[in-house]
Image 1 (cartoon, rainbow, N blue to C red):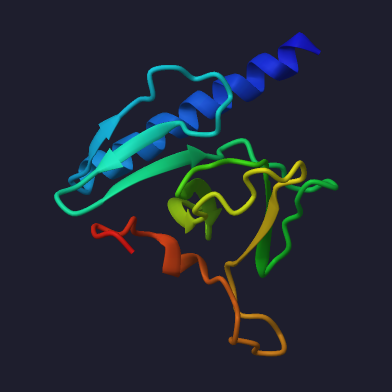
Image 2 (image 1 turned 180 degrees about the vertical axis):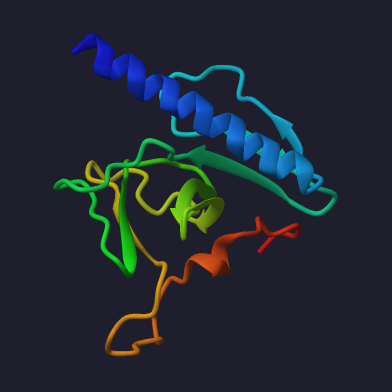
Length: 145
């Protein structure tokens, strides 16, 4: 049991560093919260016109009741967090991308969190309306929304 927790922690740390590298390369100033007590905020990103809190979800569950992967989409379960954005390193077409999903504390106060469905490929029925396309979340907004 301890090994699994250690492995999840290690994956989470790797995910945080990948997100930090992505944001630094895009010109963001980054800060760590003073304490990481499970409060749901992993880092703070600041630009000239925006300040965002971010929760990184690298070890998201795929292939079980907490999330699934299909040919066309990825379902991700997110625990309650007060963060503005959820950063999700996601593999699409064998390449890893960082998605910045706008959250703004939607699940905070809920004991179940939320599910996020990200489309990675066009579905057979060609549905486009109301779809969360992965390409739409590649950039963290540089200005307050």
